[in-house]
Image (tube, rainbow, N blue to C red; front, side):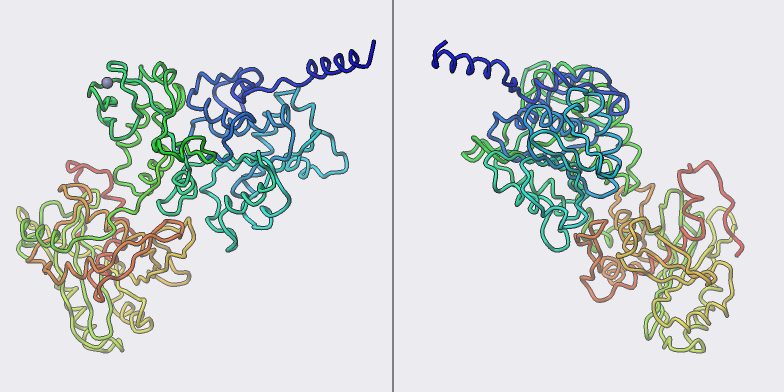
Length: 595
Ligand SMILES: [Zn+2]
């Protein structure tokens, strides 16, 4: 055997033994096993089951030029699993340093210990590559895996220094929007992580998340910033027109999708066949989108494969949450894969005034039929008290019954204005038209943000079980805060999450159909132009706090808004709202006539 022959043989042997390089989707189809702990669909991974994942997986393959992939999506579409596919593939096929990034330390523990560890163990040929490190502690072994040619580390976004160590070639960020927008003032997790990759010409970053609040969602910002933004389109079963599945094409009552081209409707039985023929299309189609290295994908719950979220589930959920803001936000984020926009930012005082002029009633003559309970909200100013009397019907439908201003200094409990208040409350009596049932306020709330000792003495003097002191607390309150909270050691004194109440009220004021939540006004109740200017004196502004908004004054006088917030809050505190919730008109309640 001469030297040439020897070289040729060696070359052949190398070629023969060199690992077979594969697209990630092919690798997953060949190797990936889903066990029960990971998914309700067990057995061999089939990319054809979720055809929209193929392109995303192939972008993660070393043959693709794509470097950054941002997926804005709803829950239950299989995106975490493709992150796991990718990491297993890296360990098995393309060793190097990889990070699995999660929002918090808590996420890391559950993901590494449960989800990833069980995925690893069900793939012995991948698991075999992990090198034992006898000296490492158990936790370190969970958070750091070493294999020939590389390592896998689980990293949290809680601390900036976590994201600022050495160079990393591959990064998978799951649930990006749950991470802080700005970590310790040093930038977004994506920005910090991109710095880790600058030394590689062939690095890749995959970030997936359900979005949160518009303007603050990192996944949306990065999707929008991508050079190529893609949506998944499928051919219409009737006219073959390629279209995406969007809420605007879907009827939440009939549960049918409408083709935007031929306008024919079809049901979910077409889903699987349509998904098979689907393809990603660029919405930009400009110069940048060709050979893009930053690509964005978005997917909503309509794409979820059969056996996960059905169109019926989506319609059901949508139809059951219309009166609940928190659940509507969750639906938009988790099911529609869209960001939540702050709604009803500003109200129009003229529209509300027109409502008062049109639906005139006179509560002083007789109570509107729907009223079941009455509450009162009192705002305390330096030189006057402002008072609103509100009638409550089923499902927070409400009537403004009276709005009055009592003039006079509020410095001391002996001031004359408090005597006037007692007289006002004593005379606060209403009657229904067709019977003589007498209604008096079931609960009264007085503002104690101001004049604290004076109001305490006033409350003690009035000494009525339904008389509550309230004060607002800022929006820095904890995320799990209840809308109202009893102040420790104080009788009938509550702190209110006023932004939450204002938000509820703004939502109610936006309801235009008489019924659940609707607010009735009448000129005879004092609901004139000045009143509506005060009621709409604040606007909802977007901020980066946990709920994404705060209220800010746009006019100096906002007493009517405060009065209504107190009247609403005391209806909650005294249990009225709950008693009138989800009840129909025929379930009669005994009206509250005694105090
Ligand atoms: Zn069609």
